[in-house]
Amino acid sequence: MDNRNAIVVDNVYFAYPDGREVLKGISCAIAHGEKVALIGPNGAGKSTLMSQLNGVLMPGHGRVVIDGIELTKESLTKIRRKVGIVFQDPDDQLFCPTVFDDVAFGPLNLGLSRDTIHSRVRNALDLVGLSGFEGRSSFHLSFGERKRLALATVLSYQPEVLVFDEPSTNMDPLSRRRLIEWLKVSDKTILLCTHDLDIALEVCTRCLLLSDGKIAADGPASEILYDRPLLELHSLELPLAVRTHELLHDMLHKAEMDEEHREIIKDFLHAHRHIHGPEQHGHAHLHAHDHEHEHLHEPASDDHIHKLGHEKADHKHPKDEVPHSHEKQPVEATESTAGQSGQQKRKWFRKGHSHGDGFHTH
Image (tube, rainbow, N blue to C red; front, side):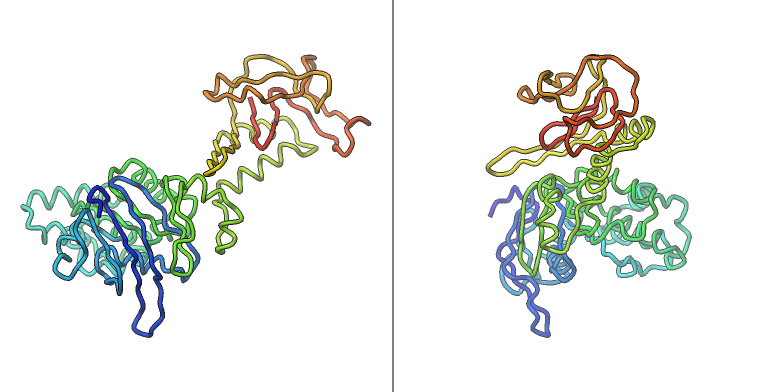
């Protein structure tokens, strides 16, 4: 087994005492420092798999190896120092009379000095936005605050691997944003078990799709989280960010939009979508940036083609061709012409064009 991996799950099966088989031959490996999203419908086995990683549940068959150490009853202490799990329900982790005691519990059991324990508690609470809460009762906090406190209890003993079960549930927007930013810059190995596909898309580079106790897909997050048919097949939706960009992209082609609103949408659509299939390369880009020349792009014309390089945007599409006109005139509403069958009346705007499967605004 490759010791360079932080996590190795090798043909793991698991059934609960009632005989219900939940994991059916799971195999995967996660490298040190990798950020992976574990997604899937309810009942897929996500929480059960997560619980195998530090011995909360033990495999019925197969092996779990953490940083080269196989999970056994004898290795539980070593494994649990390496893998920290933040459960969906924070009350599963909080049991001490005060916030300080809960966060200090892990470092205390590591035998650290008093000064080191105080330092780790202070740093962990600061990371989750609970500085000054040390003397408060854990159970008098709001659910969102307890959720952040549960994260602090794990961060304080500094495990190498962090496993999150629905980390953003019931978090207020600012706390969720702070968590996302921390996850993005963290050098820990991170596994996010979540239905929040937007946080998965923003934080993770890889995605494991679990369905009916088996891995249905394993690949780049930028592929799996854009694959509408795959997600819908497993009772999931595209991330809200992707659906929003698709909606706004479509709006740019519709009639009766004034220039002010069109510019707002163009500014918002500064995003990149890349899909790299195993046998083909497809992509769609959404941009808003300066253009090299002043002219008005008009509806498709058969007699004038503009070659587009996009050198300024650090990407090139040398074969893309964009119909347009160099006739300078005010932006105004233009009725569809006889030569534009099926087109609706629309307001044309400067510095915008579309081609292929992508859309660019300049």
